[in-house]
Length: 224
Image (cartoon, rainbow, N blue to C red; front, side):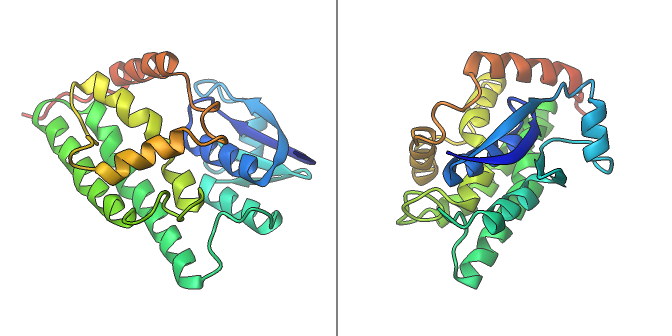
């Protein structure tokens, strides 16, 4: 891997940090990982990302870049090898469109599925299913969202391969079963077993423990 003056501030199970990790692995770029303690944010994180105070932050030659999708674009623009975005302008725009949809809709519905209770939980799980229908459609005749190789949208959705199954265990529900979403289920297997991904996914037991803790911390009781 190529050596660069590159650091990434992240958190071991952050979906948004994982995107950056995988993108850099695709590009073959080494970096220094700085683990953040999210409840006790470091002075360095607050200095480098004073606006949002969140991970990930990529620091290249002393210059910080925040927000994972913006970081992915920066990585693509800086290191041209092994592109993660298509060259066709329309295809590139659609990759950004679906990444934005995933972050604005799918992330929120999945989060709601494990902090809501009762009928509101059921509604959130149903919303996850409705959102996944779009991604099932996008996978027709494709191994990955980008085709034969992992690309931008795959990276943006990659966190789901660990989180959905763990949240299913917590909820006692099934959000992305093989019968309803055969293409998405196959994508999960293909993505999980990719050489750049399989050794970097959060350990399941540790992730389960973390999400159970978060469920207790953020649980919202059902409305009357």
